[in-house]
Image (cartoon, rainbow, N blue to C red; front, side, top):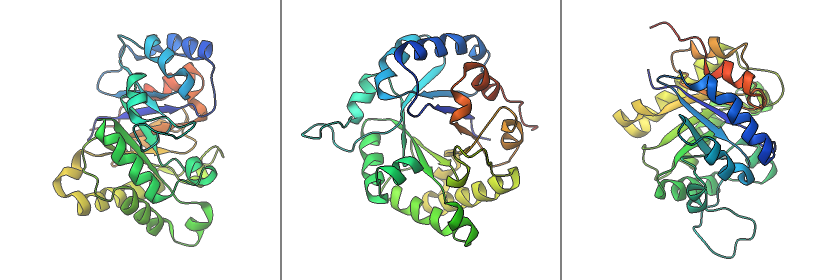
Length: 250
């Protein structure tokens, strides 16, 4: 079993004051976190404030996106070096909302992953199929394409795969534990065929309407190593319950 990773993706939410308040409320619930990784992904504007608030705790930070160049005439973009400077150890790349609204292609995602690895960031690489793709029986072929495109010429170190079925993000619908396990098992097999023995240490986490009510059953799945949490991560008490999920039986 890989070390669990529980990540909070705040998306377009939280001011500086709200960020400070959230982290101060969360800290007491994480002191007994033990052998898990806790990651918060605030908006860019809150990263440095979050870094200061989380100092001397076991809470790590992720950026919600990144650009693939270190510097240059790219108005509005943020480089890997900049997010490291703001206190990040992780970065989310390939989220379905970036693919849908900002037209991040597999090629662009691959460039972002390579650029982030050059700065020793841990990449939370998101993949997932739409409802129509699942209903047409194309889910696994879509995931295969996204994996091949995103991980082209990318080594296995510092890679986390986040399986997020698009039809479950922000909809209240969640893949059943059996559905999640089926897909995670496929991803693990694909990674093994791609990386060999190195794939064993790659964590595969689930995202898509994760809540305190379903985290235990999801974490009971053999190949689920954690969760990428959206809406349920916006309240400290809610995310704390997810972080403190009931341990799966050994």
